[in-house]
Image: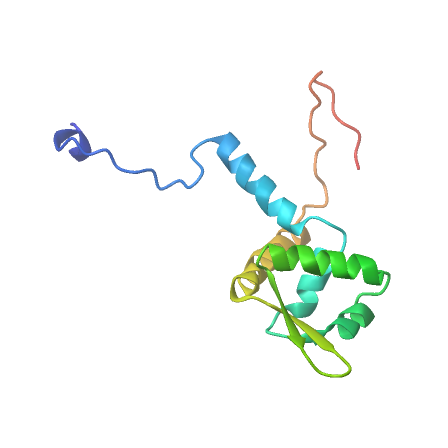
Length: 138
């Protein structure tokens, strides 16, 4: 029996967004570049749920981060379209941060990642190394 698409000379388009492993790896690399850094995910979790926080509030809620690092991380996320910076021209100046609509859609993905990490089996076998021996447990 022949396929319908062969009869009508129609080649269905691939539903796979990343048809090759290298295309998928490039996509993952782009995503990780946007989220890399020790503090970005922590900052995102503080802003989830439509919260609008002033810079000083973010600084208080993220102990251990320096002002310079917080500014750097926020600017990178702003450039990537994840965070929106709102400046109020008043005295003293006020700056607030919130997630963009697209940034807010990251919440379910990060929740899924947390769920995945929580479901790690306790007794996992070590992965074999290229020489065929088992790698040491972590």
